[in-house]
Length: 115
Image 1 (cartoon, rainbow, N blue to C red):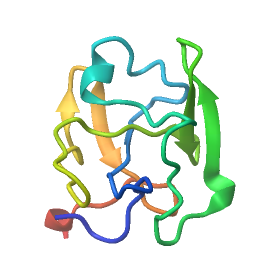
Image 2 (image 1 turned 180 degrees about the vertical axis):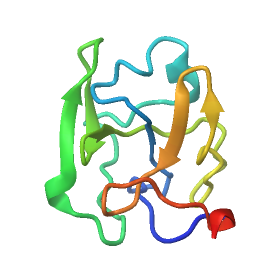
Image 3 (image 1 turned 60 degrees about the vertical axis):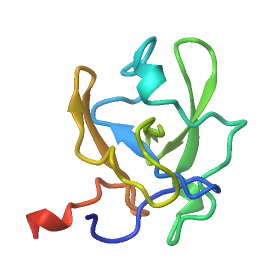
Image 4 (image 1 turned 120 degrees about the vertical axis):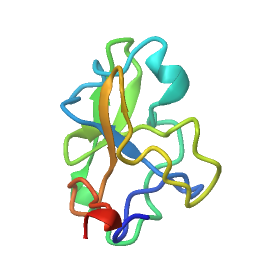
């Protein structure tokens, strides 16, 4: 489980960030098969409760596509999520790093298991 609100796109799909990734260079090539980036032409994260519009930005990825960011964190979806409300990607550690949900305050969402 996850404590508190977190960012989703307009389809209700959870949005994640990769720790330390600032310009999309942390997730390229085969990483994108698992973690598709939220691009500008995709559904914007407008339906999230508490969303602060001033934190929504855009970064240009190494391949030239424009990715939506929040509080400086490029946003990704997780391929193993099974629809709206699924948060299977939160706390994942893989070869690219650590992945977390983002709160409307632009910080890592805490896991309820941690209290």
